[in-house]
Amino acid sequence: MSSVIHDMAKQGFGSGTNELYDRARPSYQPETLTHIRETLRGSPPFNVVEVGAGTGISTRALLAHPQWASDVNELKAVEPSEGMRDVFSKSVKDSRVSVAHGTFDQTGIETGWADMVLIAQAFHWCPDYDKAVAEFARVLKPNGVLALIWNLEDRDKARWVAQLRDRIEQYEQGTPQFRLGLWRATFSTPSYIKLFHPQEESTWSRALPGTLDLAVDRATSKSYIAVLPEGQKSSVVSDVTEIVKRGDDMLWMDKDQGIFEYPYNTYVVIARKK
Image: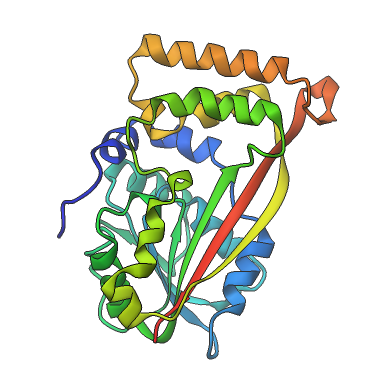
């Protein structure tokens, strides 16, 4: 089993951080999961491999989706973090689902088993894109689908969100965050060109209900914030609190209850095996 996992991911998503992650991170909107479902060919039920399954946020969304709920035959989740697997096992209760240790390039799934490989909020951590896509192609059936999905705060919709992201991104410490686009090198690797058709990309915008506590939790659930010394982490919390409270362009859903619009984008990339 490959042990190549980014050090920040090991630390930031290690034991003791995952309950916060599961509570703070947003789920996936039904429209995006419908879009992914419609890319699959053939008749259900389908076999799904979820790589970097984390605490089960995307798994639970998939199983609760009107179409996916009845169209999943079996879902094999692969996750390298023991702490995340522990939360996954507690939060996902479905006889069709299993979770095991695995990485992007060593999933432990049998050859040709999967109709779809799903990766939610994780692929930017991949250390070797060429090896990973070769592994995805190995486990996929002919015409099988690789689906990548991310939720990300939309800094272009509100100044306060841009200010918040500017503040916390100071601590990224060279980690391969989604916004840097390093993961796009995947589509020019020899394995991808040989084994997959050109990718298709889609974006959805939405406003989620947010609160000050939720904004703080989301900031501190990021791997590079979770590993900070307590003094620095407290400084981040104070700054996030100030930015949210000062947000002069904030749109309120219920000001009396402190509920505001938290703008997000969801990005989906679909790649079909040749």
